[in-house]
Each structure stands twice: as structure tokens, then as C-alpha cells.
Amino acid sequence: MTDDKDVLRDVWFGRIPTCFTLYQDEITEREAEPYYLLLPRISYLTLVTDKVKKHFQKVMRQEEINEIWFEYEGTPLKWHYPIGLLFDLHASNTALPWNITVHFKNFPEKDLLHCHSKDVIEAHFMACIKEADALKHKSQVINEMQKKDHKQLWMGLQNDKFEQFWAINRKLMEYPPEDNGFRYIPFRIYQATTERPFIQKLFRPIASGGQLHTLGDLLKDVCPSAITPEGGALRFFMHCMDISVCSHRIYHLDKR
Image (cartoon, rainbow, N blue to C red; front, side):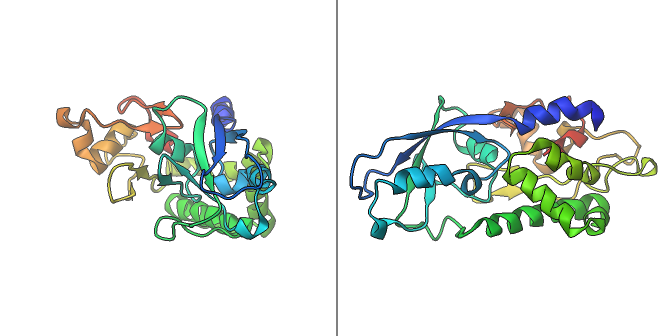
């Protein structure tokens, strides 16, 4: 993990310049100015937009304020997807800043989950961590941690504290030398244009012959059509980068 620290820092401090604009049909007492923010890619919209919410609530009638939600070019943005994932799915080809529309009415029940507090975000985040560790270590590492360790993970993410987060998360990224790697690689391939939101299956980091699998090996196994000439139009992004399918060891898929 020491050798990767500069990369981990670069990923952690990745930011997306964003312009928030109030939806034109929202009723206000005076004109609502746009609000600009550098959004952290590894966080969640509803975790880092308290200032956005307060900014627009100042110009609205209290009786018109309901649960806040966000959309981009007509697509409601799922709060339980990391911000960087939302950008890569919906806006990777757009010019910056990313223009997001803010709503306080007409919550899209069929498209979004409700998020009434940060406790909901924390529960979702910890469920993802536990699912990943079940695949990597049969849940042994996460179960051996104390409650204060779980809380430090969450507070590190919530407060954007790299050292606080990675002091605990590094334990989830380690394995005994005799194991030669994780049991399975936790991954999801999210899709922007299909009814199936993501692809997820069991995939080992090491082949039966002992060689390390690559990202290309995973894609060939999970979505083989993507690496044929006919699938050449498909593009894969990881942390805003259009990635090569052949040159990266599969271990790097789990740097999150």
C-alpha cells in the first residue's frame, strides 16, 4: 500500500467543478443565483451539498421546501452512487463546470431513493464496505474491527480526511502473503444506456495457472462483446479516465 499512496491521494482529492442552478419552476421570493462548488469524486451528493441546500432555501418560501434532489439534463441523480460515478455515467463528455439542477418539489419516487438524513448515507456506505470485505476476506477483517473503527471510516469520508480514512481502510486492502491475493475482486461495471444498472459477478484475481488477471481478463469474462471489433464503440471509465483494457492488473480495480 505504501507504493500506491500517491495514487490513492490523487484519487481521493479528485474534484469536479460544478454549477448548481435552481429549477425554473421552483417558487422563489427573489432571483436565485447559481452556486458553485468543487465536488469530491469519492463522496455522495447528499453528503456534500448542505451549502447548496442552504443557499437556495434563503430565496424560497418555507412552505415550498420539500426533500432536495438533483438532476442533470432530465436525469435524476442517484444519491447512493458516488459523485465521480454519476459524472462518468452522465456527463463525461460535457464541458466543465458540470451543470446540475436543484429541485425541492415533485420528488421522482420511481427513480430515486429517499435520503432523509446522513444516517441513511452512512448505512449504505457501510453496507458496501461489508459486501466488499465478504468477497475479499470472508468478512473476517470487517468483523474483527471495533465499532469505533467503522465510525472512523465513515467520519473520514464525511469530513474528507484522507489520513483518517486510510488508517482504517488499509486493513481492508491487505491480505496474508500466503494467500497471494483476495478471494474475489469486488467490482461493479455500471452502465449508462441499459435497463441493467450494473454488472457484478465473482472473479478471482489470480488465474488457475497462477498468473495475475488483468482488467482485460475481467472484461473478457464479464462482457466479452465489449472487446470485440463490434464492441469498439463501448468505452470504460475509471475515476474519469478512459482506461486501457489490457495493461492494468486486476488488483487496481479495488482502489476506492
